[in-house]
Image (cartoon, rainbow, N blue to C red; front, side, top):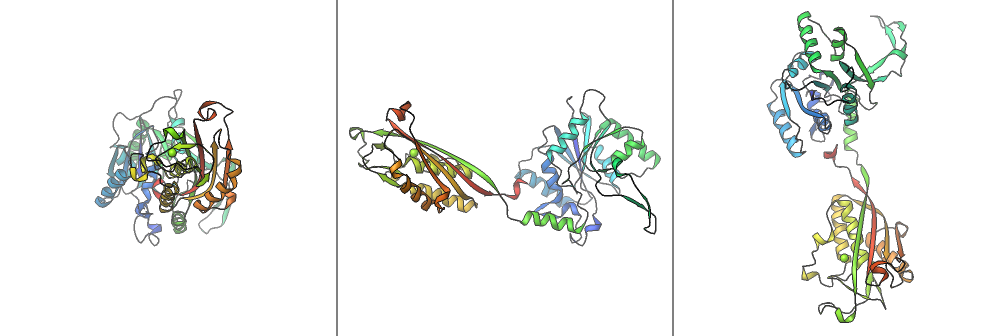
Length: 415
Ligand code: MG
């Protein structure tokens, strides 16, 4: 593979008249799906293709409002890729030719994509770049395509079948299509000179006698052309959806003898999962010292991506002295509810030499299931020693780890 200086062209200049009834007359590339114009979905995908140096977005004339919205979207989605906008022409090939004039002279390859194909993935863009940017005999053009699965008939002007084509040699072509920039520029100049009319840039290169390489396309990379395509896209975005997340929590508390207990801390039994464990060492802690609920709270915060218990409840806050740790967990669970996070399973382990956890396991499990509002089968409590090793082995302290599994709503911004 060689290093290419690649730019992209995103074609968003069409009129989309076939979909006018569905889009209320708006060109389809500006039709809003979840408050964002259709073309944005392609732009957002290509912003994740690290090898692209910039993109020229081709808009119809008189698109000041759309240009402003593009700037806002780039800012709010942290898209830092250089973006140039230009005005399209009457035909697709005219739009491409205009865009080519805006690509920097340092560029050597270009990928051209139709905004009506919002589902092309970054993997597909990279596949085109991989095939285009090879050291030995790089192709003039690379296009993604799928094998044809339907039987294809040739028909006459009266819709009567003339022939059945051999589908084994047919391919259905998609975008993005990649090209050697100098070759494509020359081909467009030839098209102007000879007044050629072409449907895509690969056809233009073929006409000029250049070879074009086909790589695998993507089944989902469909072109939105019919009203039902837009309806499907809207329904995909309105459907509530969630993805599984895992949060991890870890906490350690030091054991203290009676003589070293801080004055502010009353003598109280060790507490695990909200359950008092009598005849156990005291722990040094600014709250009630429930190491298991602290680890569990951190794991819930982990699912949320919201830092840790220490940042929410700093140990410098004296109002939290001897606080019931269930309050910390409840706070994290309130944050979870607000974010739409649904905790559905927890697996907790207490690691200590003393006290023995087994006699209290059922009570701890029951209490944590109550605090989380989960069925008892969705809460697992384990306990282990570390075979006399380390600080737990020396009975200097106790530790706990927590794993929380939850479902997190998919925010449309991540599309
Ligand atoms: Mg703690």
